[in-house]
Length: 373
Image (cartoon, rainbow, N blue to C red):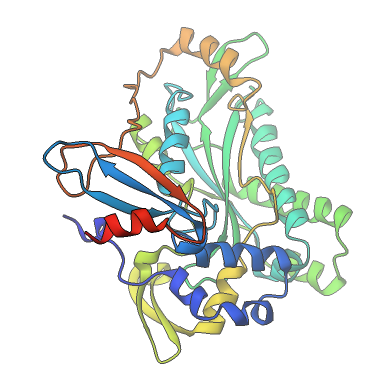
């Protein structure tokens, strides 16, 4: 079994639980406090739970399970959500080349992102799509309507604030006459990144200035350096697109597997140094600073961090996909039927059947006695 398949030795929840009384002082925001409390209680007696019994005649083992918090920021609760989302996206794939485009905000906007996270991140989505949409519509580059799936990440490897938008964009679009048209580079590149970068900076500064109060020093810093829109080389096929979506769609700021040690009031976690060839090092932060940094990446209540645009939007993808498939062929994905049955972890033969549920008060005495046998 691979190491990443094993249960992590340390968990974010244990750090939060240990400092639960201090969380209001570390993180003043009430919504973020509620989120951290939920993560601390995940799969503990405070969440209530259920008792399952194996239905195999030769086993019949009882198992006690505590409920999950199901919070989108929880490292332990993303697996099943990710799989369901990927299966839905598989059905939307076009038989076309896809590009990975990244829109990144400069560090000088971090202060505004902390003050007005919803406005700063919403503007990032809107301007990012506007750039892709308009470059696609421009006859110099494509001259057709295209689409985009965008995923917001706000963190760097050291848990610092680093807002950026990961996007997948098909290398083509639909013309006014309804014909599929591929980008003029024949799939070698999407659009000129230097032009995209200049347009992205100008449009973002203008759009953000309409919704927030940008000070003159910050505005000067925004234009002091070049902004870089990063367009990675294209995916080789549908499997690579799905693999990408699986890695990024329901990722959280820090997985439990990255926590290597907790000792002497410090959290030691692995960090990839991309400026040094992706070399992995260990960073140690005090428990308090670790919690503070993690809380930077808790999104506003109800904020949508995965969005679909153009040909890939929910309102258009059904009709557009059928139209495009008829011209360039369809991607056939084997439909996986998810099993709702849980195998017994003891005998691996039987199926687990829920025989009792309970709240934070714990299992009823009758079941406690049976669990102890």
